[in-house]
Amino acid sequence: MTTTVPRVTLSEVVAIERTGVDPASLAPDVRYLGLEHIERGGRIIGHDTVGAAALASTKFQFTPEHVLFGKLRPNLGKVARPDFEGVSSTDILPIKPGLRLDRDYLVHFLRQPSMVEYAATRASGANLPRLSPTVLGTFEIPLPPIEEQRRIAAILDQADAIRTKRRQVLVRLEDLIRSAFHTTCETGEVFPVKPLASLGAISTGRTPPTAQAAMFGGPIPFVTPGDLDSGRPASRSVTEAGAAVSRTVRAGSTLVCCIGATIGKTGIARERSAFNQQINAVEWGDDVVDEYGFQAVRALRPVIVARGASTTLPLLPKSKFSQLEVPVPPLTVQRAFARQVDAILKQRAAVENALLRDEELFASLQSRAFRGEL
Image (cartoon, rainbow, N blue to C red; front, top):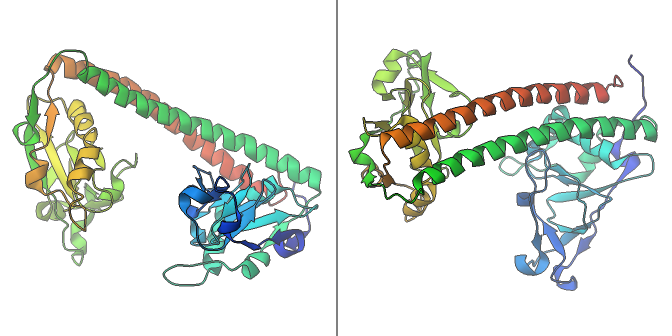
């Protein structure tokens, strides 16, 4: 049943508190939050201190009573609920709800995809878009009685907690794969270490001419660095004509980004795939099981990053990539490891499907909550 509730502007029910404070007047152990400490979606992932960050410019103060709203690039939805007091970057607006507005209700309202999108459209500045506090204050929010706000926030918090637990399970499963790999390689037995060039065919991809539309949109995945480690299918594809200009590798090949900010990211081709020039691929030979080879190269990411950091643009040429070495256990050991990984991947797929349902439920609850239908 839909209930009509009054709507008010945020400026009527919150105070956007931008009282500046000089860091020199603060104790060095006061906590500091910058936008880098808030994830997309609002989770706080750490903090600095006034002393450790050597702060010099004016900051804003906040307490556990505030909502922190990232005004720089508001499309990122950096809306946080701190449970401690401290100071923040001035690109973070401390919002203090008044007596008529529940803080948790406000957080969920501002985190809605529709509100994040709306905030992005109201930002100004081409390269560094910011949402002004004045414009933020004009946003309208449904204002049911405070007890109803708390009820809605509690339901959304519970649904969000379920999503969070699913994500934590996925992280643990990923850690389990890494642990299984290290256990395989640290049995006490010394395995031969060989360069990648001796273990498979290594190739660098190409991008077909983007002006030739007939080369894109076919059945063959076209992998770029953004697709690696994403857990999703490639966002683009090519036709056979496009694949002939690019390069393809068979299913099971390892794909590694060897240039740019995402150097060291890895993926595994789950079917015949094309890939761009930022990626080197390894099609494993007879001495390496595909899944083992993928995890072995994945474990090399710190080495790839370090060796590619000697230039302004991170870059590990194919010649140096080919020289990277990995341990090569007997095939019986590799196959046993691959069976372990397969079992874990099946668990991960089940959890990912459950998370997808949780996400759909949360989105539905979120949408209904602010239409008065929850």
